[in-house]
Image 1 (cartoon, rainbow, N blue to C red):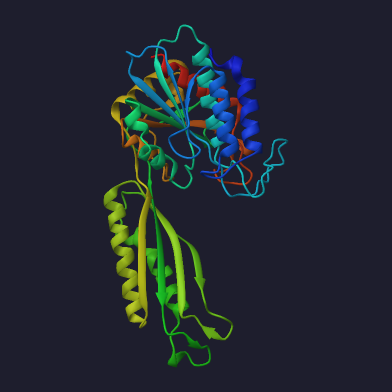
Image 2: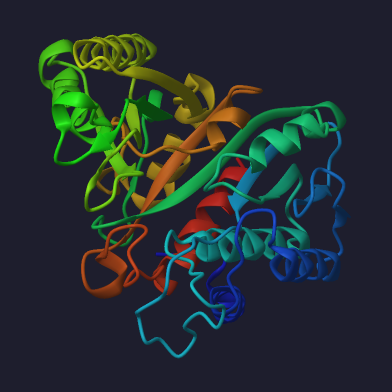
Length: 383
């Protein structure tokens, strides 16, 4: 298989290992941002750092009459203590590239270097290096700071590695590709009291426990079984003590959906169940519900374009053009809502650290797919 960026593989590995060794959380990617900007400048590209905190954008305009295609990579890491024992393991305490953003960044850097040096390239490409994907803030900040006003982007693309998918394979689909993520917080207030005299007080812990159990029926009994959704309680805290009934309980969690109708059903049932159980226990309940990541929608034209590109390069059997949508969320959704966009998945491997789940302390991006991802972007840029 002829991969145009094969000659840059060692460069991309070096960049990735460096970024992996010094991971940074969202909007604090100061070292990463500086490295990316320096490399892009050394490639001879026009570099912009005015689109929000640690965001970096570079423009390669070989033909201004060609439509402008944007490719985005995320740069932030996660608050996780790495346990891989790699020679380039994180040196920053309790911060790790456990989602492969180091690889996404290195892949796009390789693409930028190749195209900037390719005399046969006659296109118009914008390289978008985005901060704070994990918290859903990066894309919104770049949009707010005028990315889509300053650059007349016609289409935008992004990729994400997939542990468990074989190396050399790709997947995407039209319409919904990743789910929405909505966070909720529930506060239960009761009288509290002495643990020996529960009849004279109130127990927020017991009320909240009933709420936790009942909320699990939303997906199983209220959501259309033909649709996918996930509902999780992830935090449960009270102010109770050994001999003191809790007067306050706080629950937090999130829910993932693949369509707006399901999300609205969950939001409605969540509030109804919480208020009903609280009232039955003479307690007061408040519910906050906020969607931090909308559904990511792949538009038809860019999806067909990248699918053709991948099949032409890697073969029909290695490209799933109608994969199942994923229930994880992506803040690329905000960018794909501005202009037609497409989000694709690239296989990260089926064994070892490359097959560990995303956000696992044992996960690692596969260096062998750096040339695959960057070559895919090169072929797209030259279509």
